[in-house]
Amino acid sequence: MADHGYESGRLDLPFVGICTFGKWPYQADWSGLDADVVVLGAPFDFGTQWRAGARQGPRGIREASTLFAFGHAGAYDHEDDITYLPEGKFKLVDIGDADIVHTDTVKSHANIEAGVRTILQAAALPVVLGGDHSINIPCINAFDDRGEIHLVQIDAHLDFVDERHGVRYGHGNPMRRAAEKPYITGLTQIGIRNVSSTAREGYEDARKMGSDILSVRQFRKLGVDGVLARIPAGRRYYVTLDIDAFDPSIAPGTGTPSHGGFVYYEVLELLDGLAKRGPIVGLDLVEVAPDHDPTGSTTTLAAQILMNVIGRILHHR
Image 1 (cartoon, rainbow, N blue to C red):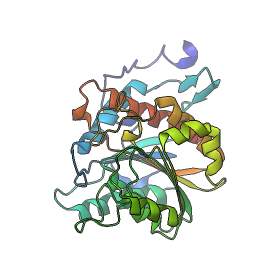
Image 2 (cartoon, one colour; image 1 turned 90 degrees about the horizontal axis):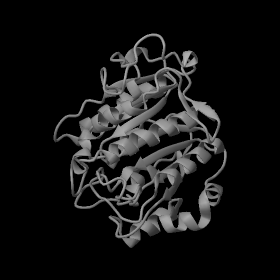
Image 3 (cartoon, one colour; image 1 turned 30 degrees about the vertical axis):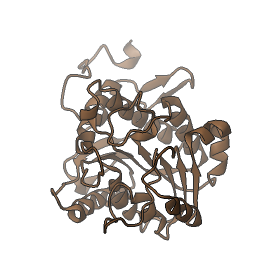
Image 4 (cartoon, one colour; image 1 turned 45 degrees about the vertical axis):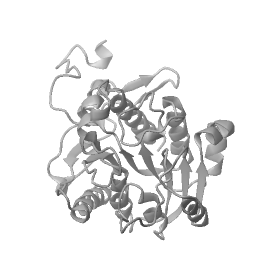
């Protein structure tokens, strides 16, 4: 027990203290960032087309993450025989939320983009908590001077709508907006299934613009190694994870649930393999709407996958 520090200082149980992601230190001053990983909340859900509520995602994920606040010794995984996020090795901070201006998508997105740019300028890994999937648009915008990246999307929906009734920056548009960027070298879109918000033409456009699209069933036929082999090796990767990629039996708290989704370990093993394949330079997790899940399963899943993926990204660096 003494090796873990539990015999000294505060016990600091999950329900005690101020609620930041993983109980990491809160840094209000964005001008002096010095960290390996920085969490930024993006509580924006004006881009939704059905059930709103993802604006509460960052708060819900942060609260759930306190369960995984390892505190004294990091997180030991007996299967891997690795302690992830060991104490004292990495600087991990939470800088709170980007300012959201109600009814103003342009200003809200600009504030999210400014937050991600600040994190990148500090040479840290941005981890952004959505918010609906439109928050990926300003996240990707912030990488415009950071060199080429390959975008890996894990999602139930393609999100490749160009424009619908004048809407270009909603949660059905982010992958189309990303594919238009000259520094996005390609997209791997995994988990896409069932009735989608994108018409046939969107799929055709996506493939023409460099997308490799896989459903959950195709993923399972290929296996994790087979899917990883389709992703260009040695690239810099940005990962965008929509919680509706998971089956609603374990993640009902989202605006657009879709049956036939992933289970936890499928996504964790994929992202662990991706982190070994090349550096993951940015990560967002979106569409968690806690009010649609009174059990708290969705926020717990979001926090757990993030904590474990961050640990693996840092371990494989």
